[in-house]
Amino acid sequence: MRFILDLTLERGHTYVGDPLDVAVAWIPPDVSLVDQADIERGRGIVAEHAGEARSEEAFTTIIAARGHAIEAPHWTLQHIGVRASAQSTGLGAAAVAPILEICDAEERPCGLVSSNPRNVSFYERLGFEVEAEVVTPDGAAVMRPMRRSPRRAKNSTN
Image 1 (cartoon, rainbow, N blue to C red):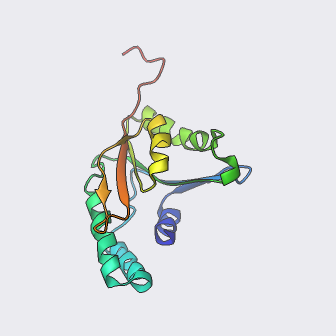
Image 2: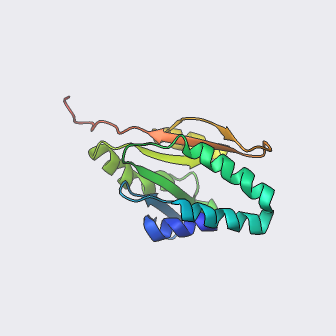
């Protein structure tokens, strides 16, 4: 997780709320989060900590989930974190709203991958839909690529 967060901080946009109860990291449409060198670096980190076999399983799953990525230029919600004491207050939805508004205004889709089934309903309330469920080879985890199509402006007459 630290590896992906580092890449996001290097290449994306990170927003931290005030008070510091929420943080959101987005990858904009003109930036690629990972390239082949990053994949190899990440594979090495996992192998160092969990072993070569586990690393291969993890990256097989990640690459399978990436097979459901949006091909058109899009925003990617890479990470959202809300302090436990502030969860279920609307803070998370409010924190992602500005970029979702940009997506709608620019008529761009946005995507994410959720590995936590408890978060799926939150993302669905924001308009995301599960594209697939990619299960790790050992069945221990499921990655859910999700997509949100741009919404029409409420005052649109088209």
